[in-house]
Image (cartoon, rainbow, N blue to C red; front, side, top):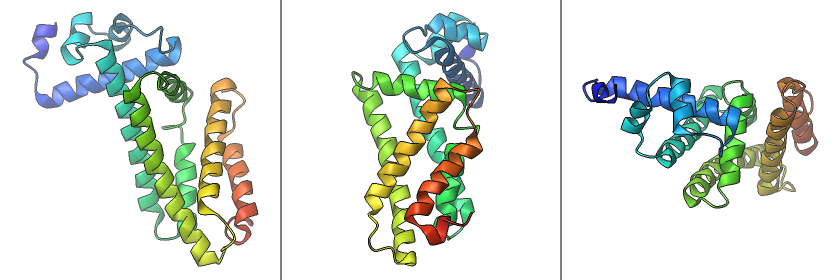
Length: 209
């Protein structure tokens, strides 16, 4: 079966790679990072072991591609949300919060995979660097929006960096809640809690929703 893959089109190969990455996400979500084997991925994707090896020479290649795909998906989702929100910085910040708790991004399975990679990042520089770049891009975008809110609202006493760090910490904490207690997690309540925090910092912009 692996030999047959050599004859397929480039588009078909992209589809197959995506299939294997999605299978990897599912396996890590069930078995954790250490428990994931290429044979498990092949079984989840319903392909032969050789097909996995045709697209990814090693398990590490597949895992790194999976992390890169998750990072690209996350970035594209929040950037698209910001673009659709329009010029208002308040609307753009709310759009990012909505994206962070959308089912596409904040699913129990994907959050489990993110935590698995974050844990491995302590000893794997490629993971750590990729996650750091993702964090820096997100942090810069959120901070830029918050700086606009501060300027437009005359909140000279507010530190944009501190608000950005606090907002990111709240989101990470609620993602952890989703991981630990998925059946009790309420996305709307999570967003309301963040709105309450922002309402304390920016009462005119977020206090009345």
